[in-house]
View 1: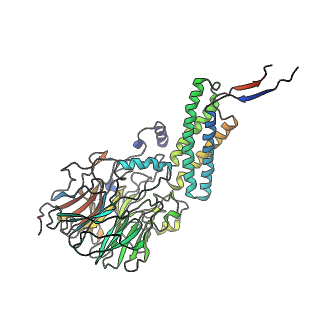
View 2 (view 1 turned 60 degrees about the vertical axis):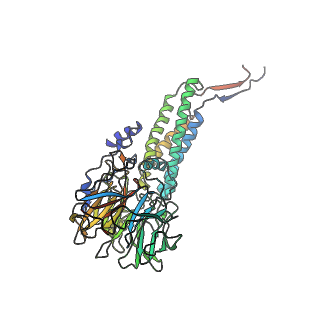
View 3 (view 1 turned 120 degrees about the vertical axis):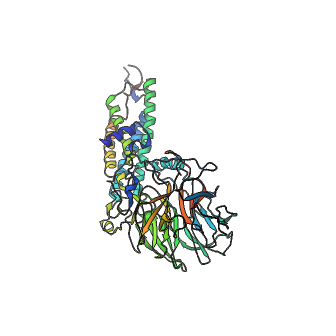
Length: 439
Length: 145
C-alpha cells in the first residue's frame, strides 16, 4: 500500500523527499547497540541536501557554556583536515576530490543536488600553515606550506618527515622545525588505490605510537559494489605501511569508508571513524567509531553491524558475514563522521577530559538532517561509554540551508579543539572560556 | 483493357518511427537485464539503466509527435488498444527507471527484470500491431481505375 502510494506520488512528480520515510531519533543509534530497523528498497534515492550559504561576518557556530569559539582562519579553499606540529604550528589541508565521471543516469541527477551543499567546491590542493605563537587564536603568520598536491587528506609527522596522503600515494617531505614552507614535490613512499572511479577519494593517515608504521584509511569504490567487485580490490580497508620500506599490508578490511584514524593516548590502540552504506533507509546504517583489530573484517559489503546481511550484494558470502565484527560505538545514520581526535586531559572543561571528538560533516540522504556538528564521545576504561555530548553546533542555518560543515578535528598546542569547516572555508578554534593567552 | 498497376504505401505518420525506436531500446533493456541476472557483471545493469532512460526520452518525443499527428490529421483516428499497450509500457518503464537507479543487485533482481520482461512483451505485441497509435492512412499510387 505504502509502495503503491509512493509510486503514485512519483508519477505525479511530487517533491523529492515526499516518498522517503522520515528518520527517527538519532540518539537511539549512538552507543554499542544501536537500534537497527528493517532495511528498505527505494524507488527514488532519498536525498535531502541543504543549500550552502556560508558564514556572515561575526557569525560563529555554537558551543556549550564554559567554552568559547572563534575563527582561527577564514577564506580557505575547502579545508578538510587540521593538524598540529610539535612547535604549535597548525597545518590546514585544503582539498577536494579529483572529480568523478558520471556512470549512470542517476549520477547526473544526484551530482548537481549534492553540489548545492557545497560538496563540489574547488579544493586548494595545498596545505596552509598557521602560526599562533601566543595562543590567542589570532595567527600572526599564514603561509602556503606545501602546494600542488593531488587531493590530499591525511597528514602525519614522524621525526623530521612529514607524510601527506594524496588520493593516489603517500608522499614524504623533509621537515625542519620552524619551517613555514616546504618545496615540492616530495618523495613517494607508497601508492594508494585511486582511479579510475575513486568513489571515496579521501585517504586518512595516522602514525603508530612508536612511529614505525603509518595507518591509511582507504574507502570503498562505490556505495554498495554497484561499480563491480573488481573495482573494490584493495579498497574499504585500513592499511599498515612500513615507514622505512613503504611496504604495505591490509591491517583491517570490510570498513566501507574509514574517513579518519586516531591513536588512543596511553594504549596506542588504533581507532577509526567510518561511514556506512546508503539507500536502505534513513536509519540505516549507523556510521561508527571503533577500535580497529589487526586482521579484523568489519562486514562491508556483505553485511553491516555484524551479521545484518545486505541483499544488494551478489553473490552473497555467508562465510564473510559470519566473520564480520561489530563496531564498538554507533554514531547514528548518515552523519558522515569525517574527523576524530582523542582529548588529552582536561584542556577544555572536565566533561571533555577522557574521550574522542568526532566531526560529523552532515547527511545528504536523510530527512530530517543528521550530523552537522562536532560531538564528544566519552570514554571509560579505554572504551567509548555513554551518550555523546554536543560540542560545536549551529552549522545549520535552517532545515534547508547550511553555513558550514565540520570535517577534520585536532587539538592545538594548548589543547583547544580545532575544527576544519569545508563549506564555511574556516578553521574554528574552541577553547575553555577561561583560557588566557599563553606566552 | 490495360491492367491496373497499383502500389500502396503508408501515409506520413510522425510518431510511428519514434515508437519503434523507443521500443527497441526498452526491449534491449530486458536483454541486458537478463545478461546481468546471469553474470552479475555490473556494466550490464548500467546498460539497462541507460537503455530505459533513453527509451523513455524517445517515448516522450513520440508522445509529442502523436499529438501533432492528431492535430494535423496525418494519421487516422486514434486506436485505443495500441494507445493503452504503449502507455502501460511507458508507465512501467518509468517505475523501472527508478528501480534501476538502485545500487547493485536489487537494481535489477527481481523487480527490475520482471518489469523489463513485461514491457518487452507489451512492445513486441505493439510491434506486430504496427508500431502506431493511430490508424495509418494508405496512399495508393498508380492510375485510377
